[in-house]
Length: 154
Image (cartoon, rainbow, N blue to C red; front, side, top):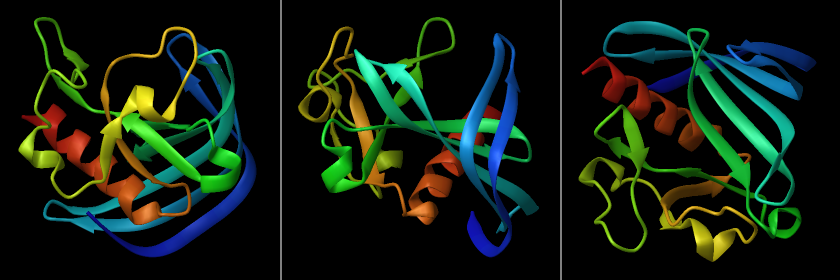
């Protein structure tokens, strides 16, 4: 998926999840294209209490469906980096790709990948591989969402 142009940017975006609403302080919306045509990509920026503290949260929607979620690393204020756990097919739906026990799936070769517990400390941190990128790298955020979208369609 390739970003074509920015369509909109704003503040105070709210999304209705099945378990309730979530507010995002800022959003950016793009027109994008893929092999199957044009798409709308929205990236929402907010905060959520995760792994023992409030962290930056980034969600990427393609055509109004959420496909990727990122959270801020422990040193986000200095690095600006966010990460998203790698998911693989499991017995029931998807599960995390276990760090360091499992190989990183080939389809993630284009991404910078690290172990989640290397970058995030706190209660309940999963031993998972995670895609790492800068919060300003909207092409990588969108690329991961597009990959997840394709995986779900198979």
